[in-house]
Length: 83
Image (cartoon, rainbow, N blue to C red; front, top):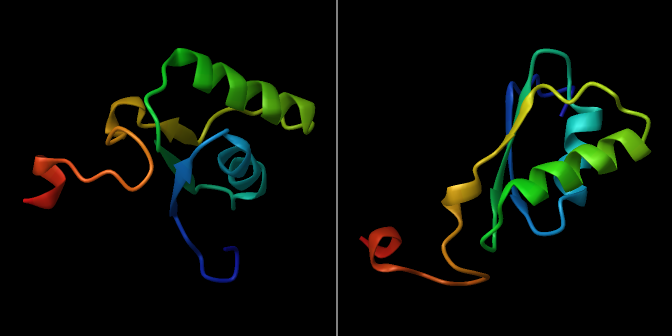
């Protein structure tokens, strides 16, 4: 990630652990976007922030969870996505 000079990282989000790990390890100036695989709400953002705090990472900036980007679950293909 650092060697490639990535400025944007995109990941699927289930429990939030991978997203939290990427945020904690991301290079300065880069952003992390998370796409939930299941319908979620603000509680997932709180969960990710809690994971970051537990890992000793107090800066919760530089990431975003696209809460409405889920497609209803794992391996689901709706009409809009299929088009």
